Image (cartoon, rainbow, N blue to C red; front, top):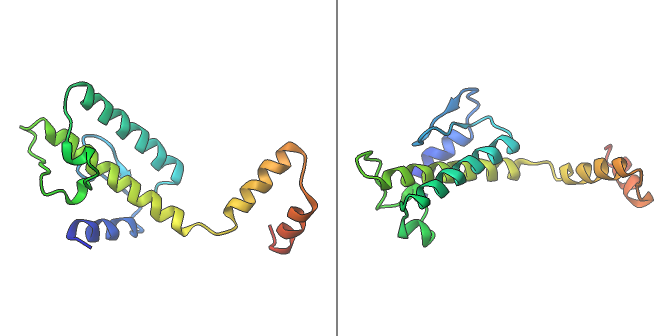
Length: 138
């Protein structure tokens, strides 16, 4: 694990209730954000990346799959247009890392509970599913 990811791991496991701006051009990555909030941040970042692409700011390394957090070609020098894309790429990776960490912490029964909610809204719940959920106290 490289130094940047090690530092990010510290941030994503933090109990700090305050948002932290990492590298960005305006996106706040809140280490206590929910999955939905992180998804919204991701959408904003993708729009920023699309806007940069419309302006002709692209990166052959990012397009080839290079992780922006540990890219040896990245620049944060605002005098270079590409630095805006580097910052967006780093933020995208930070948001993705935190999102995946939250997904990994999910209770294995969360998806089953969501299925129950959906089935209840429809007014139908299979007997086997009801029995299984009751057995697990859901």
